[in-house]
Amino acid sequence: MGDTIFAVSSGRPPAAIAVIRISGPAAIATARDLAGSLPDPREARMRALRDPDGRLLDRALVIVFLAPATATGEDLVELHCHGGRAVVAAVEQVLTAVDGCRPALPGEFTRRALAHGRMDLAEAEGLADLLEAETEAQRVVALSAAEGRVSQQVGLWLATIAALSARIEAILDHDDEDDVVGGDAEIAAIGAEAERLAADIAAVAAAPPVERLRDGVRIVIAGPPNAGKSTLLNLLAERDVAIVTPIAGTTRDRLEAAVVRDGLPYLLIDTAGLTETADMVEAIGVERAQAAIAAADILLWLSDEAPPRSDALWVHARADLPDRGVVPAGRHIAVRRDDAASVALLWTGIAERAATMVPRADALPLRERHRELCTRAATSLARAPEDPLLLGEVLRQARVILAQITGVDATEMMLDALFSRFCIGK
Image (cartoon, rainbow, N blue to C red; front, top):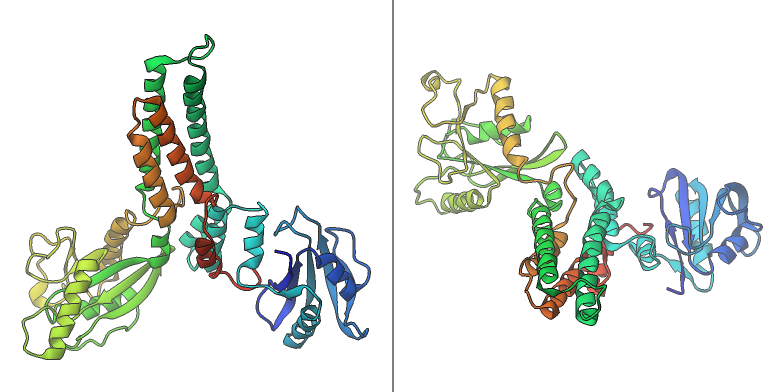
């Protein structure tokens, strides 16, 4: 990381202000060439930015941050320029011409922060999620991870395992000394503590991953033709997504509508009516409807026949029609097009089920990668052997596995996949 890098770290111009961030070993010298004398560290001062020929580029606030107490762990300078495209382009052109100074790659500032110990991998993943957050639930969970909640919990687990490992090492190395507690009772006690820790880790890993907050809950509306599926889609989405006619088979393919309620994203999916048909196009629609039913997180079943899944919400639709005023036995809820309260009640039922499919706001914000590692560590700890040598190896394996959550053994491929998600100036 010998290069000095720069990028706009604020919004894309044009804007009122453009913050150009410079980080690396030549950051101070590069900024001094642009601005002349620099202010004291962490003090914002107005400076005239000039090119090598002395021509004025802009007047900007300049702030100097000295390593290692910076966002990247390196010397870092921020130029708070006017946010016009031409101003930013002129400053960047001068920076590009500086020997050893180049534009930053996507996520490179955060990657340098990771390399210099300013954050760990779990915190960087949380920051990536925070930058992509579109709902309140996503923001809350991502901020928790970015602020180090996952890292803190993993640190506690690792400290517990380290303490158990130290006790095993003491038994193996000094069992003949009077001041070391050894024997079968101590080994059994260590094994029991490892198994309790395994249960704690497994319980945390069993919760839904944070990706569910981004992917959303898939709600599939299914049933025979003319069951009111498209009408229900429009009612739930509160807009005209689907064409509604009294003609059977109006919907011949899946229709999707994204909805956010109470900070949680949902994907509403209307499907073709399930029926026997010789029409090739309609048959394809039926086949896709059946696939959607199988993949649904929540199935809203609109039919007088029993639902194909035991966990389906059995909806008595079109309850406003004269011949459908009586709700048959077995239905979970009746919905009327002219009664907004009935639609709200259906949403309540959906939300209750969705709450079990996404992480709670107070849950540890584990990604799917974290959950897999936690599960592996818990599985290893749960089979604590009685032999002290084998028990020590089990503890070592669990420690190595959990350490990967915070990036101790992260591979370059994993890092490349993560940091490609960041914007250029982050």
